[in-house]
Every structure is written in C-alpha cells, then in structure tokens.
Image (tube, rainbow, N blue to C red; front, top):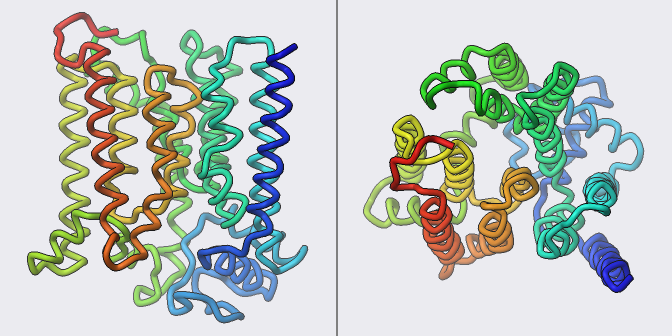
Length: 372
C-alpha cells in the first residue's frame, strides 16, 4: 500500500512537471522545421526538393527526415500548424509508453530508480515536452523489437513482430536498424560464428535494405547543393571538445568532424575485435559501442541520447550508467556558450569512460572465461 501511494505521488509530480515544460516556449527551432515540412506536403510539394513555405532556420537546406515522419508532420500541420501541436503529440506518445511500461511491470519487482528515471528524467521532460523532439518514439519501437527477439531465440510469431517493430522504428528515425544484432545470442559456437549468422540473416538484410530505403529520398530528390544530409554528415558539429581542439590547432571544422568520425569507427572496430576474442560479452560490446557512438558523436544534441533508452529498460548491468549519462545529456547545451562550450562534453565523456570500465571489468572484460 505504501509503495502504491509513493507511485501515485511520483506520477502526480511527473504530470505537473510535464505540464510545466509543455507551457514553456521551445528553445530550438526544430518544431518549425517539422511543421514547415508538413505545410510543404499539404501544398502538394516535395519537402525533399522544395523550399519551405514559411521562414525557418536553414531554409536553404532541404529535409532529410524519413517519409513516415514527413507524413506525420503533414498531419500535425493540418491539425494546427503551431509548436504546441508537435509538443502534445510527442508528449502523449512518451507518456503513453511510460504508463504502459509501469502497468506491465506492476506485479513484478522493478527498480525504484528506473521508475523515477522514466517519470522525471530531463530528456523526457525537456526534449519531449518542451522541445517537441520525436526521437523517443523510434527508441521505444526499438525496445519492442529487441524485446521480441530476446526470449529463447524467439518463436516465429515474436520474430514476425520484431520485423514490424524494427521496420516502423527505422521508418520513423532510423534506430530500428540496430535490432537485428540481438539474434542468435546462444546458438553460435563462437562470437565470430554469431557475427556471420547475424550478418547474413534475413532480418539483417531486411533491416539494412529498409534503412537505405529511408535515406533514398534525400539523395534521389534533393539537389546536391541543397542536400541537408550531406551538410549534416560532413560539417555540422556542436559541443564536441575534440572538434574544438582540432580547430584550436588549426584544423577546419570539417576536418575535425572527419577525424572524430574516423576515431569513432576505429573504436567500434576495436570493440568488435575484443568481442571476437571473447574479452567482452555481446551485451558489453553492444552497449559500450552504442553509448560511445552517442557520447563521442560530433553533434552533441541531448535528444540523441534517447537511443540509449532500450538499454536502460533491458540491461540491468548497464542501466545505472546509461541513466546517469542521460541525466548528464542536457550539459550539451553548454555548447551554445562561448566560454564553456566543451565542458559538458568533457564531463559526459569522463563519466562514460570511467563507468564503462567498471561495468566491463565487473563482467570479466580482461578474463579468458568462456563467452557468456
């Protein structure tokens, strides 16, 4: 009874906090881009090659959001072309998942820290309810896809559901392409055999092809000079101390972004090698690689950290660290200041590397014990 009263009080506090953030004006201009794309579609034009009908930031660049999101932008713009519409849609989607998750776990022992995080974490409060970002929807769908794959090599019906969840997650914001990695966790005799099985599996081929299909409109329809995806991949950076350091030593920002991207690829390759050599479990390799991708990414935007939510929900060993990193994610807003633009990145990276070492060491990072 006491636990139920505490949960009700926490829910009430969470609802009040969400309402408060909903009433605040957005800090970023992303909701304006979302609605402008929707208005472009409603005008019968292609958002991948047509200028927006209203004044927005980066109006000279065309959109590269997946088609499913573009359709949702059109629906939201048709209902009411104001940021509050996007914020309400994003917020209700977030709140619906949290309430569903708590109801599903109501008869099972659940960490109070996890419940508190879902109800009051700054990503959900600020990035969803104030900013209207929609990345959490793809992350929740990725959670459903992985959860469908995990139990006992997945029965056929569950595997079919994983295809659906992975496809919708990818169509929404690309995240679902990660789900196929969770196949064949115990069937293979060695990590290398497991990698081969996963890479040539139907789900992997389907996921990669579907991922490429979502990116295709940004390349097929958008003129090169207006291609926002190319500019984003090669030039954009925010709050990354490594890029700032390269600039300090005379490199251009584009070269700094290029070097950081290659550094991330090298790190991921090293993690894969450690997995093949059985120095780290699959869960350790996956979560460290994914977390490092987010933490070291050239563009440090806090809503990208929603990609870590499936790990928080599904991995008890990595959960405390991933929750802490998500709590630190808003420090990336220091990137908008002149004198403290690298501080948030330095703090987050330091905590991530120290915390990852502890988690990996606890899971026999340096041992030659059989792969688990």
